[in-house]
Length: 125
Length: 331
Image (cartoon, rainbow over all chains, first blue to last red; front, top):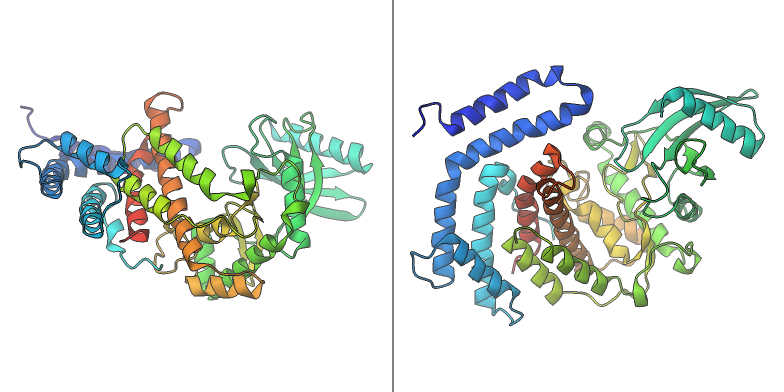
């Protein structure tokens, strides 16, 4: 096991450094440097939140698909995709259950990649 | 190409094509897209100054439609009353500037989205802009598509819906990693696909915040017609209303400037016929298309076709589009 700093702490440091040097970066690389700084922050959150997110998604899909609670995430995602790619119509309850599960998963992904993005829920239709 | 050769190239074109002796001054390359660059300049001749923009293609091969087609579409649009910079010259010869180009008049205003939103906030003219956009799109869509240049891309059997769904299925199949929300969204698009439109129209293809010149008085012009094609008018109406073009002003659906009823009002004032179902469908379609595009950028980085940290970062933006799509297809 590595000594501190943790991976998340180091990624936060890398992100901070990249933001500090942005003014010295040549004009043509500034956008790339900003993206890199943001990605370091995303991966920092991913290291921190990712394992719990994955476990929550796994439990959610096991319930949705009525599978043993020990089934691994890759298998469950495969089963969900198989159902979604099957042209047999989804009945209304099934469609809503899948939708709700997808929304929960995407919200959890956004907590890592773009915090605050899922605060907007009142899309005008 | 360095600036001196640009000035020489442009001056040579004026001499050859117009028989005019001009000097090219105040050349400025505006923030250019990846595929083309825009050179702002003044052509100074016999006591007059023409303020122009040269839109230059890097090579003839990678253009979506050739410069003549794009220029012809813009002129059709302008003749129908759509605000867009008028074309002042077209040149397919790559020797002057290193690629084919067209010249258009230079209109003043903001185009960079965040600056546009600041201007609109300051002037309080968001509803004016969006109403004008609606009317401009309706006027464009009223143009008889039979008048469009022959090379303009048009869907087989005047059906833009089925080929678009087919394209989405292809892009989906190319994904390195399936996004279940996209698969769900594509199912919704298939289940809710509208009939082909009663009549196809010339559509701009990208008339969103970022391709609009906005001034204190409102919409000054619509830019960047390279994606123009013949298709469903609601492809055009829906696209500026997707969340990507609001730049944080999420409650103002149309480009962060106004809500949908204002766009509809403008569209109907310009003679357009509004269709809620088609509008919703094309918004979901446009959102999925953008999401698959971002995932495709990440794939290009990963497999080495185009290594770039920016392209890599696109992969971490896919969830945004998955979320936006889910909001649009709620059962």
